[in-house]
Image 1 (cartoon, one colour):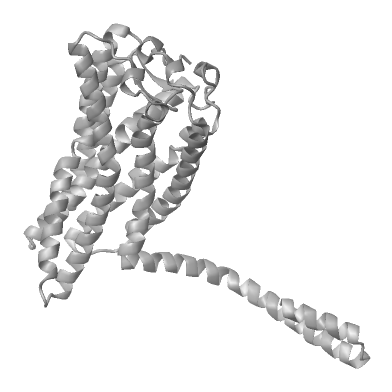
Image 2 (image 1 turned 60 degrees about the horizontal axis):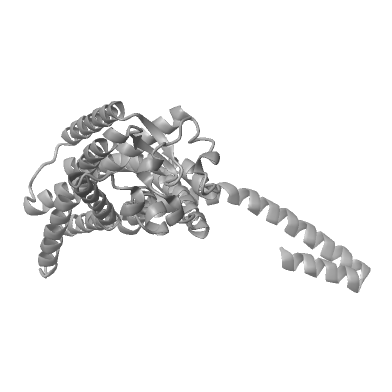
Length: 384
């Protein structure tokens, strides 16, 4: 495949230097752990929310949202392995083109992966926004009835709208190519004249869909926190109010994680967009090495905020469910317990069989009166 050909726009790499190899390995290890924890945790969470029986209309509404969040987080964690391979592999500085990861070296795979990572983070942001604002509505208007079918329609509409936008961007750009310095695939323009214009358009849409929603979500978070603190001062509360408060705190924690992991995304996008616009107004190309002038920023600013932070957020969400949801903990304990009891009869039968053999051996050893034989029997029993 054609690797990203924008060296004139990148600048002089000798001024930047080589990638930091120990940091490559560290990022790869973080992504491996995020993938393992995220895939296992989100699969279990998806099974839990799918099989959970709920009668309350509002609970069905939030169940639908949590199921969709699990699916998105699961897909994010499943698609990390190409980036892990890219960070584990020596990038081949300064001739980056010579060491292209096998999977990202396939143009079709690179295009599909790039489109997924254009869609999934944006969709995840939308879901967190819906979750946070919906819980705030229930706190303010306690008798509100949320309709589960509406949220499904909204999510499907948003997904296809996002897909249409990303496909249109793919048509306006030259290709979805692998960038060996960033270690993942994204939309690029090989044409020097169209590069800045397409970059500004792409960044504006990404900020709108991915980074900018942090503002209303943060406002919703702060209002929810204020309401919860005010309700916490009340001495007497009903069981229903306690349940709603606990559910609201869970949403607050999920939202807080989103804010923490997406603030760097917003800062990076706005910083890069500002530099592009400033350079355009001044009639300059704006080399990438001028915008990100240190090895850490040049090689790792985008992977850290665009891949690593998203991966960690997706992996940590099931941990929040386990901590905050009693039914979820009971479900996990039940699954582990069923697995334990499934294997216990075999172990018990084996233990009983060995115990019987030891009794027989002890009787034989006592009959013979051999200290050596008695010692062997005692040693075998202690190991059992």
